[in-house]
Length: 197
Image 1 (spheres, rainbow, N blue to C red):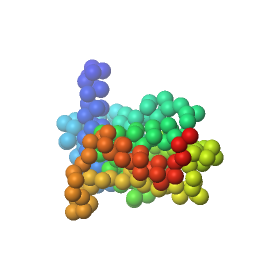
Image 2: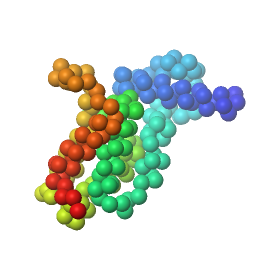
Image 3: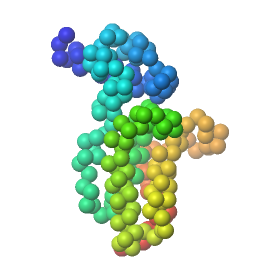
Image 4: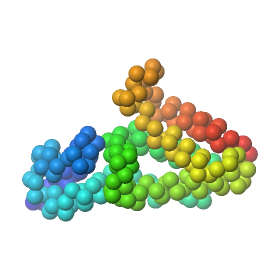
């Protein structure tokens, strides 16, 4: 098998795993189902990934925007940093709803795999918390508890607006990315009691 063929098979397996994990959960998805969806031999999951748990890890290595997170300047202005997180999380949430669904399922079920997720998502959340705290210290934001405000911002950003559950309450349809980012930014900055310099 050529290197290009191997890369194609690995890509198909990861893509199939993402679709099936999002639809049926990790526990509800078998390696056989993943390989059938990918059009690949069952033995290739062990060969390329070493099993289903390692395939889950590979999903985050390849699908999560790790390079974008690593390139963020942690010393940027707190307001610019909060705005960056709002923009990046909102864009990621809209561009990869399957991975967001997987993350939410694993967190809700409190599975052992949340440690793998933490490795990828906590660097950005750590920056957000740092910028919220620095903003308060510099008098840009006004609130009592960093923890409460941090969790409120995270909840706002991760709320999955287009879930079927909420469809009975929604009337306006899904806004475009720019509109959603702008509205979330205004809402969150008001919640932080942002005082422009």
